[in-house]
Length: 202
Image 1 (cartoon, rainbow, N blue to C red):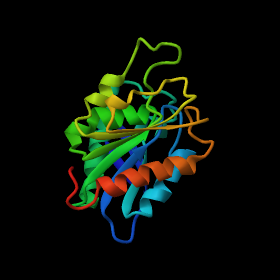
Image 2: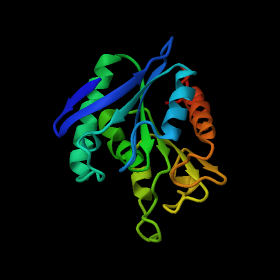
Image 3: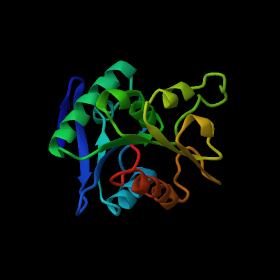
Image 4: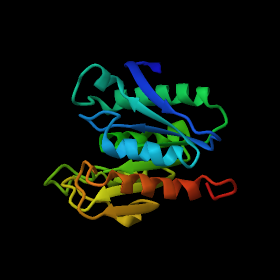
């Protein structure tokens, strides 16, 4: 599905659940795509619990760029494409997330798109070797519960448990979370299954 944004087209790969409970919009990192092993594992696990999953290739990647460019433009494009997807699935609660840079976008825009939760895979806490340049504030500014899934060998760092509603640290995993991606999918589905139940505190 092609989606027009103020900064070029985006493409969403959508997998629907039989009895849809919520919409999860996921995206990639700076240089990756929507077929990253952890994103595919999350898709499979979340569809299994009744989530409609839209994996979004952002406009900058569709143009072939390997860097997202301006955060302002990236966020504007994201807000537009999320609005389009919500229009396609009216009434479904929205969860958004992504890996690495995509997790940052999901946190930054969560209040404006009225997401009910955020899934942050391999959130890049700081540039490698630069722990003083922490981005923990982006997690705290999401305004909703955030699930962080990180590997304990991630050179971009691992957030503190206090900066997220739940922190899952996977032993032996690096920034790509591709050693055993099924564990990533299980962690996300387990959290969302409880988080998105009718009557749960949201």
